[in-house]
Length: 267
Image (cartoon, rainbow, N blue to C red; front, side, top):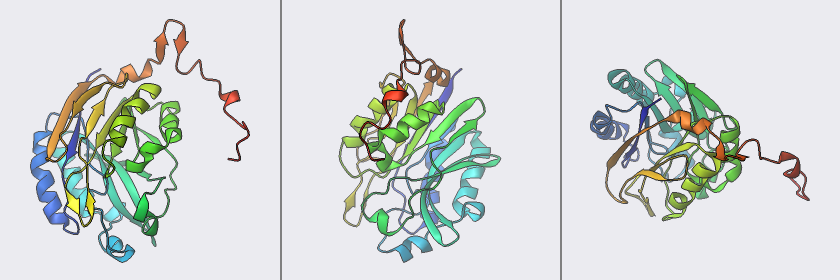
């Protein structure tokens, strides 16, 4: 089973959704052959908010989002699905979220579990857990940026049967996540599509180097550090369901979960 997966590396325009949409329109034209496209973290708003009030003013509800309506139309036009970072307003709360959608609408939402730096002053910690969604025959999970540090999140995706993990990001620590994410791919035997952004906002410089990893941790495609760039590559998502490492070792069967609990740990 073949599918084409793409990442869009670009710089959303802080506080100007129309300018961001204009940028994305041309980049998504280049992704016309893709089946699944991954966009960066907080793609609808930008990142470096001066206050929670500013973040609130730039947020949208999933059910009433101009940005997601634009992406849904792009999905219909190009016949692909999109995973995008999203500044989500829900009742009186803000979440740093990722949304998976296609031409029929929203498939699922993940809310970022592990908040980074000043995000803790703006967003609520995610409350969705780590869901895996069906995209036709393919099982798709989503994690966001700083989640890269926490192997538990990546392992849960594997245990829930993810074939692909989409990783919308606004990375600012050079090289760390880009070195670590391939290890998550190989230790869980699935594909990962890391869509990072570029550019500067206030005192933050984003590191680019988006990448797509195979089930052996190999880099299938990698972007440059400072340029807007589309990556696209062909994968076989069903390869992620083969957990055999050798003729006598299987990633699932060799696990020893009875040893992983209560080893003097408090949580």
